[in-house]
Image (cartoon, rainbow, N blue to C red):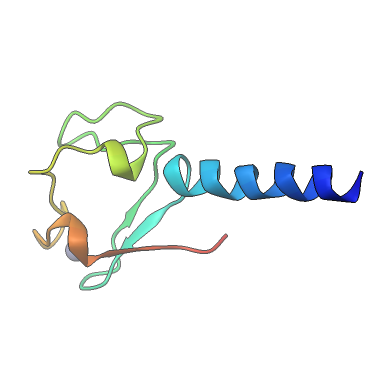
Length: 73
Ligand SMILES: [Zn+2]
């Protein structure tokens, strides 16, 4: 029983990392929220950060995706 619930928690964390984790730009503190997407780049709502196109950049300071860090909820 205990083992089973721990497994569920692990997969919860994984899906959060891939899905709805907000990401913050290290340079200008812009926050990418997967629930909102990015209107400027025509990214639809519910797009995980990992699914953004490689050419996607910070809308505020033009940093590339490597400059973003996950925000702990
Ligand atoms: Zn930025």
